[in-house]
Amino acid sequence: MTIVYLIRHSVRFEKANIESYLTDQSNLLKNEKIILSVEGEKRAEILSHEEELQNIDVVYASNLVRTLATAKYLCYNQNLKVNIDNRFDERRVGIPNDNEVCDWFTKQYYDPTYKTIGGESQEDVRNRVYEGLLDVLKKHKDKRIAIFSHGYAITFLLLKWCKLINIDDNHKFTISYKDKIIYDKKINAPEVFKLTFDGVELKNIEFIEFEDLEYMNAI
Picture 1 (cartoon, one colour):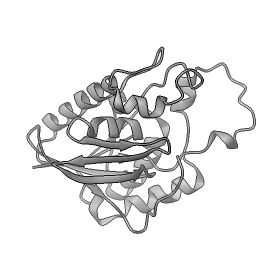
Picture 2 (spheres, rainbow, N blue to C red):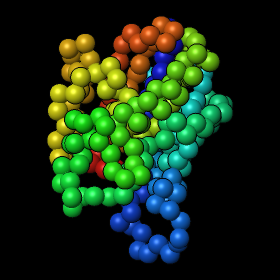
Picture 3 (cartoon, rainbow, N blue to C red):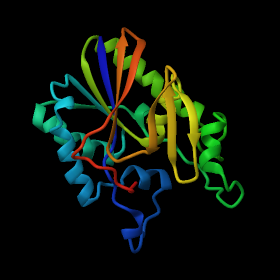
Picture 4 (tube, rainbow, N blue to C red):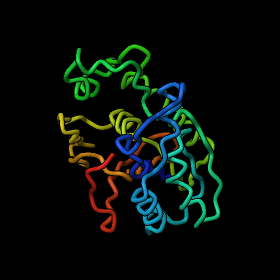
């Protein structure tokens, strides 16, 4: 069996703490460069010591700074190198349209094809993340794999196998797998889902909760 841990990055540095941003870089590049907050660094280090995440064989991370910043503690502790794969990147938002579509957050979950101009739909994200996952599974059969990714990327992938029960304006996310609710809250930072595969066939999904990483109402 191959074990894959889908790990959402730790708490990022909030944009509200940036007083001015004098750059002509694109919003996509600015998003990719967001670092972890001080608390995020502490929580990433705590995560790296969790018993469940020991004896990892392979580590992957998205192309964004905050995933690599989260992964570095686990890699350091277990003397591992990281593979960076942009297929595990976060959803590309595109041109904001909050004023035109007031329920855009829930809409993107209930309508897999919904997207803004220049952005990605749930379906777009799931397809590229799953493509990356299949390559990882084929390359590392029967290994323990950690993939550091993002909230949308992970939840959109989970909806390939899970049923969406509810998603509300407060970002509370409820899904079931094999008729059992496995997640029912706003996604944490970091957060871990454990997927078990036989070859490329999914056998089980578990949400792994850690007592020393209590829920934080943070992004």
